[in-house]
Image (tube, rainbow, N blue to C red):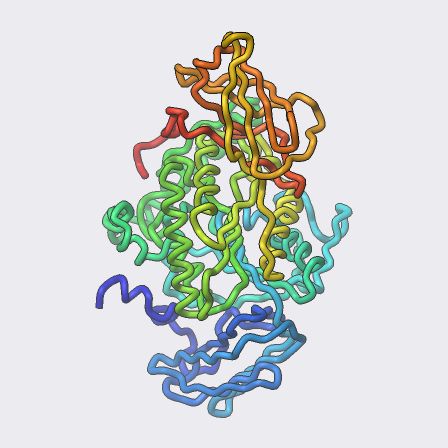
Length: 531
């Protein structure tokens, strides 16, 4: 059997089965589970091989026979919002039951550490001591544990949806928690979020393995990661020591007002092997593949910080990841065109690689333009120039919820304004130049008449910041101190930490932009020859 077809089999075929012979529901099904409304519902688990299994969801029931490995799965047709319900499974005198089950909206939040950054990490406790008490009785958040590829074929541990009994509420992931709160207010049903994030992970670790086999530009990565060497555990221990020393050094530099030193790929991701954060398909196999038979409304994807080394490759890899995830959800959950809500990288200028973030943002925007049901959430106004983990996760969740709630209601999400065209004019007989920029939709009035964000590119490729003004709701004008025939292009908010204030009437920031005739096609910063 070819590698491609092998990795398009049922998503659970190769996972170890714990407790063979015992009737079990898969870890995703526990008290408080939220099932996606208006989508086919799949319930699965294990039992003795070749035995009958009867499953009830509310008053509906389905029967099946476990396969030779003891795996079983039943399907129910799409249902509207409902609950609370019970799910029960019965086989050979064994009976399992879970309660407080709802049919509602389910979103998968995936990516890097900003997805999993906790309330404690942003200075909140959630218990009211800081003035921010969480109403946890309605929260449904299921967290997939961080797992490297080395654990990919181990069964997931028991997982919990309900968070009301969590002792340390400050340990809850901030962004997903605030997103559930926002969606719970705007939708007429129970909302659940699945969190699957791996701190520091590269996008190559989230691409299914068969994607590397199909893409000639990525195929080499499979050869680049052979089996773990015999001394791999010793390499990991040595890397952890070196990484801690480097982290401490950078922390001291920041505290003393100095810029951070760049991380090499080795220091950032670890030695090559099954625990490397850039291991091809590692995060997908360990943290996404066990989920693909579970229907969701869509994916909130917040990632890209770790791929600023080679940002010109990011768009191709993101498109491939989305394509392959959709194939898995189509095959295993019968779900078409899984929507993606992609978070554009926010403002940050705290390390050398952040100089490349404008290029990553451009790639993220282009993916949304090229693929159906992919939406790019502008966030350049929501970051923290000095912190790669911005603390205002509530504002970010509110921005995401604008897109997610629209998709949950089968509506078209709002579109951020973009720069649609531009032209250069001469003034004073050609002594000076003026750029007139048109946008796709009307902009709101900025606080100040003249504002930053526009840079003109001269014939030498140098960028010159200029102040601009809003001539009309869809027209930006910037005067130039250089001759019109020397202006070769322009950009807006093309920096790691943009300052341009323009927003559409819907409150979404004007997307960053650079004119394509600008000759600087490759990022300005490289810290490593590795990719």
